[in-house]
Image 1 (cartoon, rainbow, N blue to C red):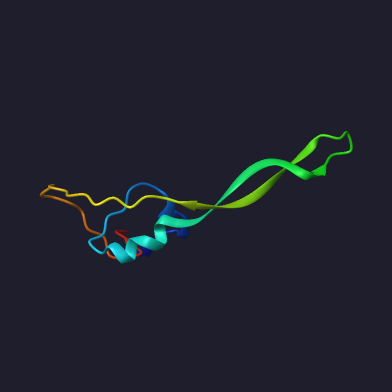
Image 2: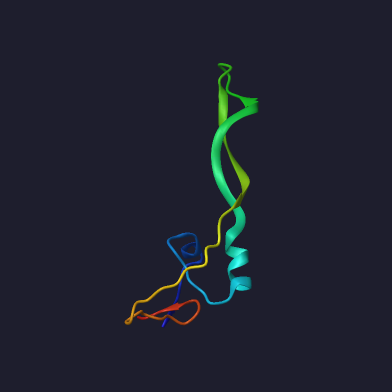
Length: 79
């Protein structure tokens, strides 16, 4: 077994039977690129800067009826 990369938690759909454990994954930050309002190049054009913005996602209650789901242990994958 090997550990899952830390960035994997932002990809796809994740399911849990515990609502409280899902909450931290629905609130966080993301890095976006935008034109600066305070930093400019020599020609007067605004610089493009990285900004961390708060994001809030949704948690949905779903019911899944699939008889052969693959289950993984927390933070591990099959090698």
